[in-house]
Amino acid sequence: MNLRKFDELASYKVDFRNLLAQDMTEWKFYMEIISAYFENRGVKRPIVVEIGLMHNAQKRFYAEMLDAEHIGIDMNYNSEPDILADSQKPGTIEELKVKLKGQMIDLLFIDGNHSYESVKLDFEIYAPLTKHIIAIHDISATVNSQVMRYWNELKYDDRYLTVDLNHFNGRPDKERGIFKDMGIGLIIKDVK
Amino acid sequence: MNSFFLSRFDDMVSSMNHCDLDGEDWVDTNKIGGLAQSIPEWRAFLGFVSSYFNYRNIRKPIVLEIGTQDNYQKQFYEEFLHAEHIGIDIDPKAKGGVDILGNSHDKEIIEKVKDRLAGRMIDLTFIDGDHSYDGTKEDYEIYSPMTKHLVAIHDVANTYVNPAPHLPPVETHILWREICYNEKNHMLITFQKNRKHEREPWINLGIGLVVKDGKG
Image (cartoon, rainbow over the protein chains, first blue to last red):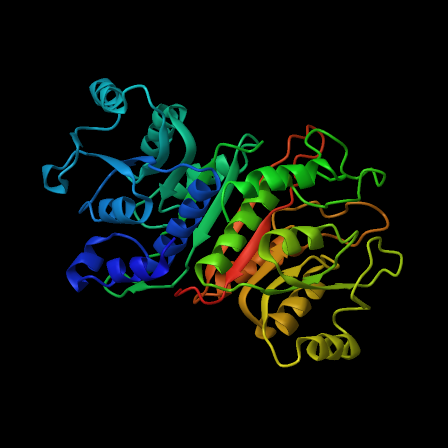
């Protein structure tokens, strides 16, 4: 991975940086691990499916750092998704399969509804369509998120290799008196 | 590093005894030996570390390993990182040779490491010593300040408190939780592949990694 290129992208504009709903340190090392993984396996143009786009600022990193084909799913029109729909509706899955044209997803990034049931369902629907890596955002978030609970179940599933990426910055939300840690969890399917 | 990494890695692993004992009896001392790693964890760890140094143009990193056992890891560091490897082990009977023989906590041993470093910083420290909370913490507190980039701790997912009569309790998972709580400024990465084992499902390994220049 070209670190200088990442730093240029990350410092592009203050507005753009704020649109990227990521801890920048976690995001950088996530990109490094993904880049190394695909380089080591000769995956040249990975297919990335992202569920929950927020401002869709991640797309640019996937395109420029991984040369990826990016397919975004979101319920919000303002996120400019490729598929404007609820990720868990049967029609959405069919629409994605049409776009995939029989190919597997190389990298799935789940960042949709953060309830336990919803993140579990996203995983159960899309993990079988994914060949290499499933990433889940906010595995360490403790506010308005039940992702951590599901992540802890996945971590002790002996079918997978898991990688936890955490930058516990202790960043306070002064208004609410809480900490806003995020965390990215990776499930690596190939454990041979 | 390129796809050569995977084929070469697999070749090296298949040529040696290792402890990736899904479904087997980890506490059987006859099975302990060779490469004492979970293979998926070791592959992912090495893949990341190799790329980390490559992306930063660090061509010949210095790797300090505390607790080398049979010294099988050395081959991997030399093959994939082109590293200058310095091994410390307390056991004079350890197979494969060791660069510095003694207790990593002793002043004499710390001085020997410093002599070998000759003013340079360590790039990667891998702590795999006595596995007690106090012993591992002491290793971390002594050698982390001497390390510029990466500090790894082995067995951070191992919660087996009494592995065998001749071994001390494994408490590294306690220290790792504490490091995750305290090290607010560093990037923390945990590689974990659980084992299939009906009787002792808690005997996992796990590699915890502190990236000191987490800002990149």
